[in-house]
Length: 197
Ligand code: ZN
Image 1 (tube, protein in one colour):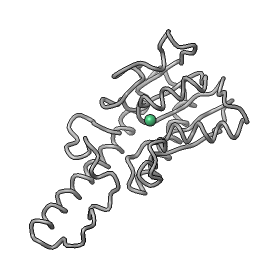
Image 2 (cartoon, protein in one colour; image 1 turned 135 degrees about the horizontal axis):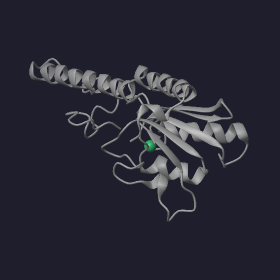
Image 3 (tube, rainbow, N blue to C red; image 1 turned 135 degrees about the vertical axis):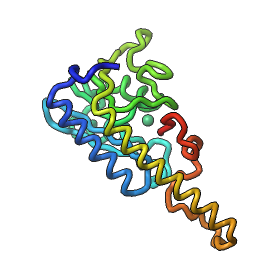
């Protein structure tokens, strides 16, 4: 983890843009994670988590941002680019980032459940691979954590309400009732120690 002095004003600006993406996920009931990819001071790809909405494992914020940046530059390589992401990348996204040859990854909050930028594994900086990525963590960590906590707090509240309704015999619809896709995700129920993602 790096201190806040690691980051420039520009870094902050782009993490804010990533948080804006996370807000989009929140609005559609998805775990709020957002990412942007920057090349020469410009955003060339944006993405936010849409896993439940799109019914695909692949709809993580980083993958969508990579896809869009690829389209923008007309190349699978993202050399010279930086990805800003609100939550530490998982194994899939970290793998894709190494494959993209991106230069740098800036991370907001740490993921204790699937973080592969040093928490569980460090896929981004493994010397066995042909590419290693500069990683800077902890930028606007509080804001990036807060939005996730807000989501899970609300999810727990909804789950509690649903249980109450069930106990009262009012819920005969057969629907999941929570209105929140992914309510059944492991780790989503208890929240515990920041089990985001
Ligand atoms: Zn991921």
